[in-house]
Image 1 (cartoon, rainbow over the protein chains, first blue to last red):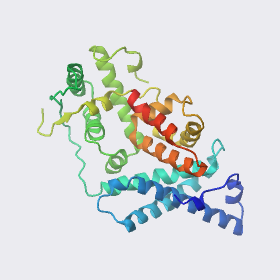
Image 2 (cartoon, one colour):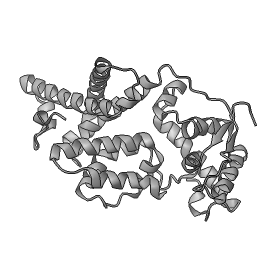
Image 3 (cartoon, rainbow over the protein chains, first blue to last red):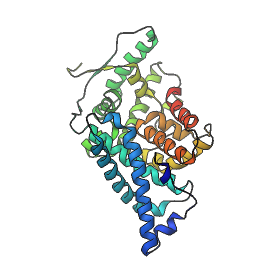
Image 4 (tube, helix red, strand yellow):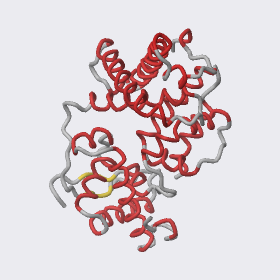
Length: 210
Length: 94
């Protein structure tokens, strides 16, 4: 981490960013520097996903993410309410953008299978895998057939069984992370309700739909 | 059973049945993320049930929370580990 460029607070970022002339230019330049710093931090944190990518590729990803994050931040700067430091608020835009870019890049040449696949429990219980766990897995496999729609099953298998990153699947389907997470919420609610009904999960209180 | 059927590992079973109540969307999580991270760094045991549940159920948001925690802790020259342990423990508790 570049300690020399660590931000110092308090600074009235909103005033500086909405000023005019050189003051605003300086604020934008400093803010872009924060975006690059946070994006670089995120890209290098997720570096193991980028098999075969060199230093230049990582820097390109970080710089692109920083540029996109800055644009996204500036479009929402009026929503900053000061409930955290401005720098913390700003960092999250770059971290989100960089993480999304890394996941996209890592999966750019990988196929995403979105078939209505069946699932079956891993039937090789080891010492750590009790018969109770095998029973639950069998019940979950059954519940996925009877309690989910085909679309819900495809999304659940891709995200929770195959491990496709949510941003990547959102890109491929032309939807958003939030929409897919909402689908997972519905999947989990249906599965939990079904499994509570069959006695495989305790209680039905939190298995209800909201 | 289809030809493309997948094995359901114990970890996948856990992911499929983990609770998402109280409900919080990814958009709401992002809106609260900066406050959540600063609160966790100030007091790792701070109460934030909806955010904790979301972190346990959404690995993408959890990764970004952990990353922001480390970045902010670096600025403040404080140890991020207690906050990171609290964020990570959400997954193992559910």
